[in-house]
Image (cartoon, rainbow, N blue to C red; front, side, top):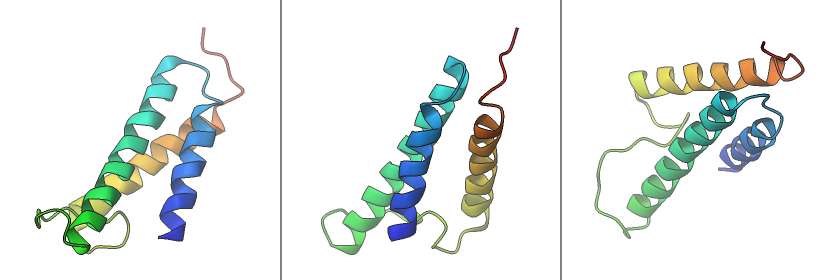
Length: 88
């Protein structure tokens, strides 16, 4: 769980350095995806929510889920790498 919190803070940090709104909203969209799935999964484990079948990011075994997270983090890293470049 500590790793997911570090990922969340890292995405928030990267979103502050994006040069355009597309990078900013991409970071916050992916941040919302990770936060919502963590909250739903922990709610299911603690019996606060009904079991829905939502995977915990990078922990639960789900091929398409993990694949989408890797693509999302690739986009976030691309935003971080290109933070100093101006488009246009």
